[in-house]
Length: 153
Image 1 (cartoon, rainbow, N blue to C red):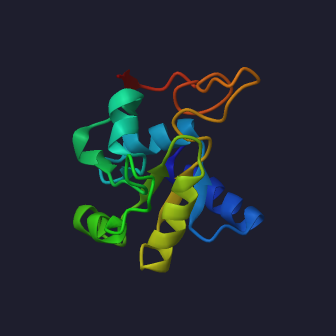
Image 2: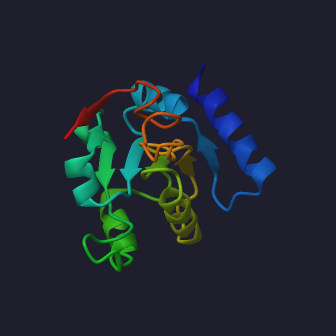
Image 3: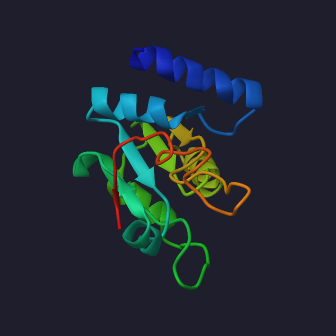
């Protein structure tokens, strides 16, 4: 599937779901985009603790932007989120936002879009996905469950 086709599908998801950002991609689509275009960036909005203790996507470092949405251990919003994003990415770049289960990434993509970033895409399901019936993540959806490249803690 070409990047144009993936982004077209992602944009259609935005229209169908009335999303306040450019679109939404599956984890597999996100990886395909990242692998085919080194200019595309993944914005990991999880806390540093999550990345350290749970794991990170395995992509080239130049494509992986770590910009925390919330701070750990406070759990408070990162007051410097936009400033840090502006230091790491340009408004016209394709940005793929990732969090644990796809909630914070939606908020981050929305805020970035409201501040001039026109090509923001949420990565559906997130890194670990939602919890299964036993309260475990990485079993029903998400980057890890899909067997995409990542490094564990």
